[in-house]
Length: 147
Image (cartoon, rainbow, N blue to C red; front, side, top):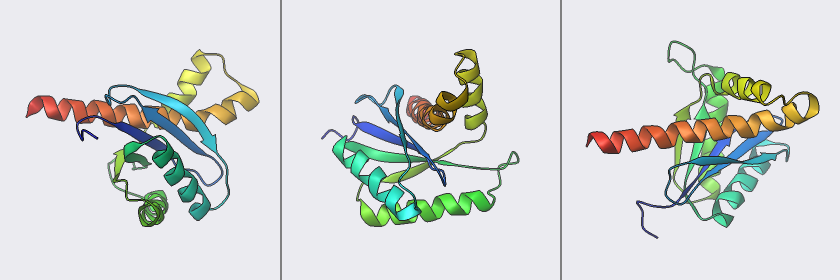
């Protein structure tokens, strides 16, 4: 596969639900896939690895929560532990993307689309994964333009 093209899998890891998103082959736009609720970090990592492999993704992007001042808190340690387990299961490269404000942006989007109640709870993690992945794709594209 041409390494300049290929799908990315975006992941918004959560203790209860994990949101997933996928890019198009050109790596230009992200779209949400949905959520998984397997229970447990290892089981979630196994499902994420399988999803990435089944979709022939070239990279997995995981949202990394940071404090507003850019430092990493306790939640970032949980995400890094998840990424370590995932890296032991798959050979697909893993990268992180600052996810500050992604959940808030997802709730704003769902409010604007009048998605409330159970549908909102089921959608917010996938929308967050989509926002995280799109941020990563945009940042990567902008870095290439500067070179």
